[in-house]
Length: 94
Image 1 (cartoon, rainbow, N blue to C red):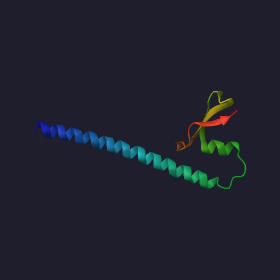
Image 2 (cartoon, rainbow, N blue to C red):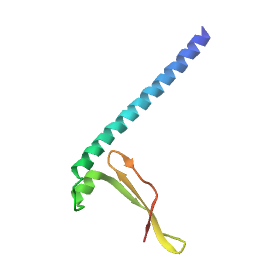
Image 3 (cartoon, helix red, strand yellow):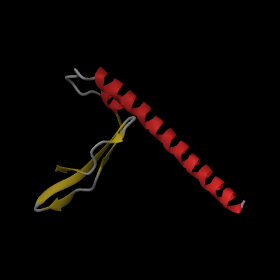
Image 4 (spheres, rainbow, N blue to C red):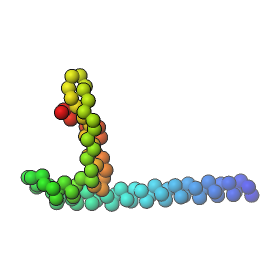
């Protein structure tokens, strides 16, 4: 009987983990659909403006300037709305 209870608890724990994973995946998928919709709306944009930035970007992180091989560089991380960071650790020459 104890083995049954142990196995039941383990199965319930696995089920809870799978349900949480499913919920996270669903949220990410919904965010991706929203992102695709925004990108389709802005596909023909010829000018970057404040409204477009507010719709597409959640925040931009600019790192400290530093020297790498005699060149000033700094990291730029863009957090897009609904999908998060697409490319991280981009070095920009200052």
